[in-house]
Length: 147
Image (cartoon, rainbow, N blue to C red; front, side, top):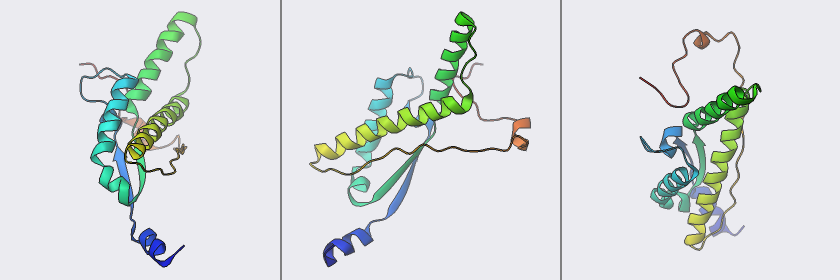
């Protein structure tokens, strides 16, 4: 690298942007790919300056998305008797699909500005002890909430 390119790379910050699963949907919106893509696109648009001059890691929630797959699995079980997929599998599935949509929308936004940049999605596996006390009083729900 030239000294100016090296200095430029050193000036970049690594910023973590956290998106809750509900940030991908606005309250009351149906859980559709189109709605999620639009909301991601709007979020990326508001971060264009940050994307332009920094290294970004996006992390995201996925409660509504896992909830939808869980409901689909329950409906499939009712119809066929098949055992639904476990929660960790649904979590990984939604991690991948949300990461894929983020990649596509970030790439589109960058290309609109005439820029290109490497983008990857990385799935994670969280291992929780089955003895964790939080299992005695779960407070985080997935999917729709009924009153």
